[in-house]
Image 1 (cartoon, rainbow, N blue to C red):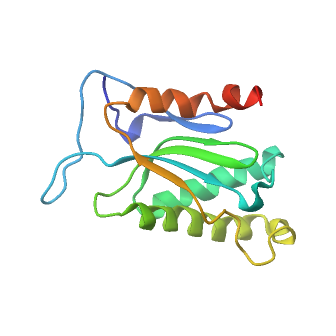
Image 2 (cartoon, helix red, strand yellow):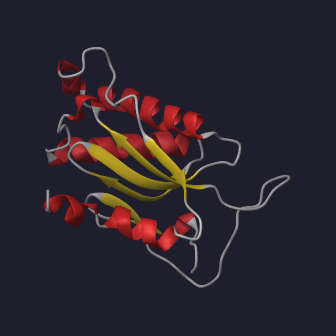
Length: 160
């Protein structure tokens, strides 16, 4: 199993995908540690409203999440935005707790999204786009299985 570097990312119409899976494992080097901090994250819109049914809002949501992550040096490996929730695998700095990671992703992406698409405020007048809860777990040896799970979310949700 191999991990890839962020420069090998490719954009698809509704998700971000790391396209190069080589056999060489490349770790990040920090001042006093070496390794990755991969997290599988799932966030849901408040009240589970289907806010991303329109392609325009789905793209805005994807851009808002990408910008929030880029600002805090959180690398997105894959991002899948669906009608009422988003799945992603991110590689965040090792100093981030899960709570801090989600505070950044949800808080800043909401802030950006409300500025890009002000009409969303009609549905969420208090400015809370994401539900208070979230799913977040570390991804290690099961990276490929989690990656495939996130990548195939459209297929997974087409049966419901």
